[in-house]
Length: 456
Ligand code: NDP
Image (cartoon, rainbow, N blue to C red; front, top):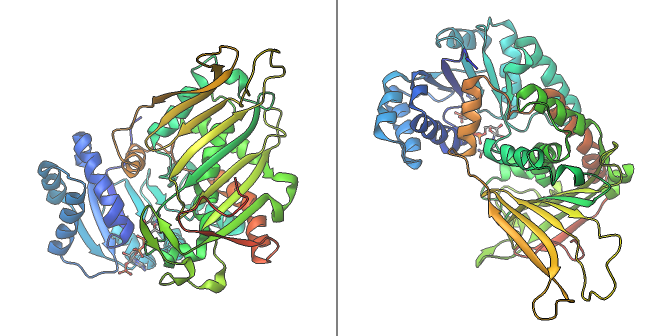
């Protein structure tokens, strides 16, 4: 694929995302693939920085990722920083015109500022091939995501819009695709006839980590389930694509999401929510969530969310897909678990129980575990359980390095397509409303526990 992208215009270059994640990942990408060093990096933001301040920031970010001095020198030789109010259409027009065409414009900005900046671009001629890179959250609900999509569609074709989902790196996505579709053994049982339930879990030991400004108005449902775990669900549930490319893959994922609806169509019971109280995680004392700086207890923000959905199609009807994510939990657990139905008949004479087979796909680092029932040692009539496990191949780059590689290659394979972004909001919007209306209880769990009493 030949890409027209020759410059990376980083808006919000003085912000946290840029400094902590994007610039280090860019350095690692350029280290791993030096042929990309011809891309010009232009930083922009509201800070009035001179060349030295910008270069110091780059050096610091690159040092945090142990980027080689050859790459640092190559970037510093061509990069520059411009002070610019990104909501000022004329200033943005001049800035974009000064970048080698075609630029990839990365909106590392507060979401409301991104919307204003995109609105301002309506009057700006964009070079052919310009890519627009948008961070999460993409919209605040279905209606705002749809209107942002309509705005973007006026600016560039959909294939040039990258809605970033850094959660699943390229290698994790491809590991899942390879496992599902390159094994004769698995695909025939990957359906409601054989699968009892699917769990997609992202439990963190991390606490709020000073992110109250963003997190306290988002919560676990929007922060993780709406934006990331529904994309994982789409990969697990989709029909086999003819090719691994952005068109086939994203079509298949969109079809799965369109078939997805809340369990029993009841927003009050399809979701559960809880908030952590004081406790201890891995030996660290954690205060009550509501005592964290910047938290407004009246918002009733959940730090643990669970959503159950059904995919109403021939393959999956009747199978609950449970998506769960939370903070300050006792165990770090990031995995997709397919639980298979019990065998229809266990031959008489065998003793012990045959537990359901499970296929577990662990994420970051990627691993695979297949839980089987076998004859145990000693008395061969007695059943036992084993887990067959293997590591899956890790990617060369951090997740944001893979995001940037996709952007620079003009390949949105890993980006969320506009219709899918809207579908994810369509699925969760009624639950958010039910929680706002207090139609579901906000439960409590002690930091360091496995969640509230009674949750699996
Ligand atoms: P920050 O608030 O740290 O940074 C935002 C940047 O935008 C600042 O450099 C700010 O400059 C700049 N900015 C704001 N208004 C303007 C303007 N009118 N003109 C020019 N520059 C402006 O936010 P983050 O970096 O944390 O987040 C950016 C985006 O990335 C958000 O959408 C967030 O949800 C997303 N994200 C962030 C992650 C993170 O870990 N930080 C992780 C995943 C996604 P100034 O401060 O000088 O106003």
